[in-house]
Image (cartoon, rainbow, N blue to C red):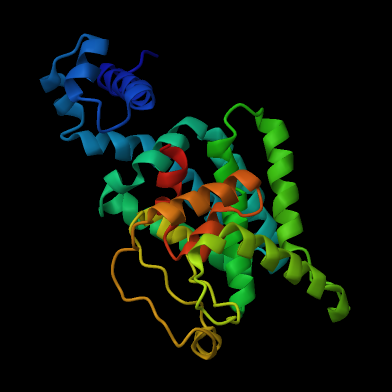
Length: 301
């Protein structure tokens, strides 16, 4: 049985587009360049993809469809089984679609607010809910978002590591992240103190000499769906408003786009990332911006 000529041409266009997007970036690749690589006219490209953003959506489609199928299969499972079905399956989908995923992280904002955008938002929210479990509190929801990041981000940053090695490392990190807290509360304070010391050292440039010794300010919460949108607004975690009000004078972020990072904040973010003491989620929460903003400054030197 021979392949349909139209389908074959469409597949060739997608492959060439992915190659050129990887080489030059989405914005610097034109439909004319794609046509020249395939010896097709621009009109022939437009017959299959009426606009360039349709190419990007089509390249992301298999990734989104696989994530949706994964979540559907985990939906009816018991809580603990569903949690690890989602995390292990999520990681496997990320590794399977490694090339389009890298492109997606760099050109996520270009998907726009169409069907693909809304499906990515829904996938992120469903994954967070399944990992956190029913009746989850703030801590469980925060850990769920961090776990998704632990099973996503290294795929983009460690492109030279073989799949099987990276998979083992990433799952180990997710298990450590979701491990139960020590039964004896006295065993935990030194962990919090060490984490606080690392954070203070990394972002010391943001404090002033006149500032009183503050209690730790409740970080803004950046969800996986914020990363998916590239422009979503971080919000305070549920139940954290009281703690924030009693700390730094009830300062609240105004709604709207996350702020751009200043030079000192960019340097602090890069120091934290290079030191390996903070995940991208933690850096975004510390600086009060979206993960997409952090990625932009980490990848553009």
